[in-house]
Length: 241
Image (cartoon, rainbow, N blue to C red; front, side, top):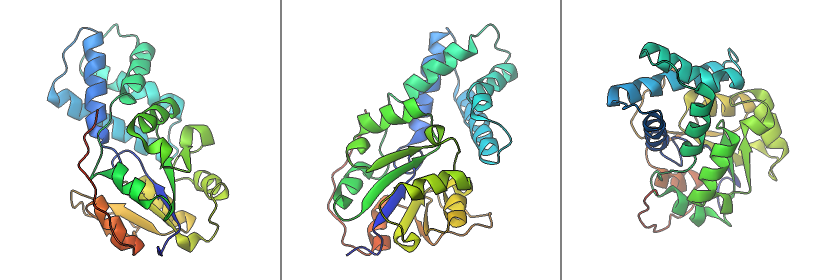
C-alpha cells in the first residue's frame, strides 16, 4: 500500500518537456510573421518568459499583463516592429498546446499508478493550452481533475490556489498528499506553505538556493515509486507527437 493516497502533479518541466513545446510554438509564430528566429533569440525568450511567470507568482503582475508582455519585451529587444501582439500571442498559445514531449515515460508511470493513488494536475498554465495538451498527451484520462490557475483565479504558490485544490480532492489528511514538481518557487514553496509533503523533480541536479526545503528529491520520475514506497512497473519508451 502506498505511503501516500494522492499525488498533485505539476505539468511543465515535470510530466511534459515545456522547452520542447516552447521552441516549436515560438518558431512557428515567427515563421507566421515572416521572420526567422535564432537559437539565441529562443533562449532569450525563455528567460523573459520565466521572468514574467516569476513576477506573477510574486504578485507583481497580473496574468493579463504577463501574456502579451513577454512578447512585447522580446520584440523591443530585437527591434521587431509592426507585429499584432495579440494575434501572435493567440497563435503561440494554440501551438504550445498542440505539441508535447513526455519526460521519463511520464504517461506510463501515471497509468501504472492508477488505482494505487488518486492523481491530479496542478498547473499555472493557460487553460486552453493546458487542457488541449493534456488531452492530446493522454493525461486527461488518468487524472481525477485538472487544477489550472487561470480557472481558479490565483496561481501557485499562492494560498488561495492550494486552498481551492485541497478543498476539491478526496483526501483531507495533508500528510497523505504529495506534490511533485520541478519549480522551487511555485511547486515546492506552494506545497510547503500549504502544509503538504513535496517532492522536487530536478533532473539537472540544480542546487536549491531557496529557503523552502522539499521532503523528497528525485532526478528521474521512475524514482517516484520509491517515494511512494510501492513496487515500480515496467514501462515502455514514449515519444512526443
